[in-house]
Image (tube, rainbow, N blue to C red; front, side, top):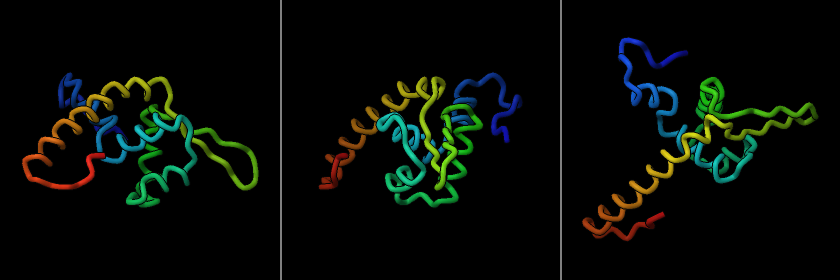
Length: 120
């Protein structure tokens, strides 16, 4: 399923968002970047508010967009691991800039509103 169309012209931002857009994709990419290799259950435990259906769907989309690799082990019980591939790793600088922007802007918002929420 291609979310980007030629009707949008040659917009590189539109293309990037069609591949890596959405709340869960960035969080999964971050978890895989930090942990290198993760099993499905580990991802689910690290993202407790994601449903099993959504996690499966997003992992499938990330694989189809060639951002992650799925490693299947022929054993019982089945063992499957996920990791970033080279193309997925190329998004990490963007992810780091997003994190920096979030830290800076969240801090200013917290200071303005006087919130005592945790900054992490």
